[in-house]
Length: 86
Image 1 (tube, rainbow, N blue to C red):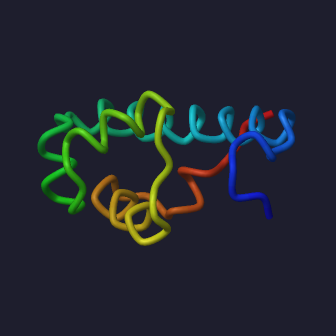
Image 2: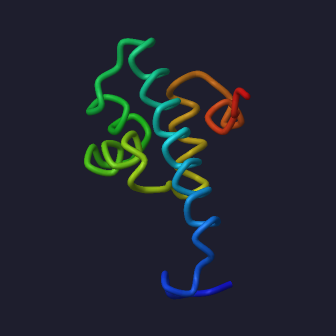
């Protein structure tokens, strides 16, 4: 696997950006449905609010463990955060 961004296939980079955006929007939608603030979700799940903001905007990915922590606070299985409705 390439380690420098210039070595990555542009299509692959685009696909990962779409996945990050989808996961972030799913987290944001579920958070709002449950009446949680970014601060409360961040505190309960163990991420910083700044990280959560970046995730919700699709600018940052999550560690595998944090994905499960966020899902637990939202009351859904982690797989729900990754579901793509096509």
